[in-house]
Amino acid sequence: MDLGFLDPLYRRGGPVASAYLDTTLAVEDAAKQIELRWRDLRAGLAEEGADEPTLKAMDDAAGGVAGIPGPQGEALFAAGGELLGAYSLSRPPVRDRATFSALPDVRELAADRENGMPYVVVATDRVGADVYAYAANGGEPTERSFNGATLHIQKVRGGGYAHKHYQRTSEELWSANAAAVAEDVTAAIEDVGAAAVFVGGDERAIGKLREHLGKHANGLLVEVAGGGRADESALASLRDSVDSALRQVAEARHEEVISQFDAEVQRQGRAVEGAGRTVEALRSGQVGTLLLADPGGQRSVLWTAPGDPVDSATDRGRLADPEQAVTAPVDAVLLRAAHATDAAFATLSEGDIARIATAPSVGAILRFTMEL
Figure: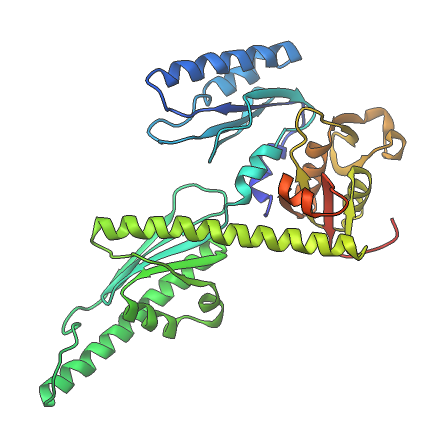
């Protein structure tokens, strides 16, 4: 997963206040309960040294988003009296918690975003299509809609000159409409850098669309059930199918990363394990994908330079200016360095760890190898 969405959280120096809050609106007085739990987190941040302007900046964002049903959470980050970021989470955090430290606490946010990916949804028929493009970091989708010519769009049965004429006209209109839809789909793919295109609707229209899409776009196409443009039940069916397909694609992508890491570990190839070797690989720009498990309650620390994301080590003396070095949790240090070096990120679940012989909680797949 690309860590570019974390840009706002690193635009200024620390210390940074980070908070994770369960904002599920499942009971009648949920809003009041959320407010009380936020007050507890706020008091804890104040005890750790967070300044009042920073806490007030978080006050304005705390509490979640009204009108969104189901389990959810939020992650808040602020520093120097400024809100750096407020993110809705697809599931509640492991527990409500807040920290005030040199670096933002982003691991759980990154883990929540791991299953997210940029994608396009297409609901198509013979007249045109509705095209929705979703960025990897969420937000409102961009929407494109094309409605082509409908004259004689329904192919007729039987023979005769007139029937052949209408059939040829229908084929031409189908083709013209599909070509225009293909342009919209291609533009949507480029808008968000889509990793998949989920398309549902009229099977013949999907076939025509395939004919007009380029090789790259065709390679991203995933046909799903549902997809009528005017029928609400068909659109709901398409949404359900897309949700299921997204989960399958995310699981497959994660499995590919874990399998690659496991294979590289076994042959002692392009992979490292442990915080020490991983931080050294990040220092030299070798890391292609950082892998981290949930540290739980035991969070080890690393030394790091406040102003240089890659100047970090297990030994304070390794830093360019040891006197200015600070400590921060291993996951926070490694994720900041991964973000700075354009490395990707993947979580290590308990199941992932169990299948790897060395059972690592920290590791990395390398872009290249060299003597560490």
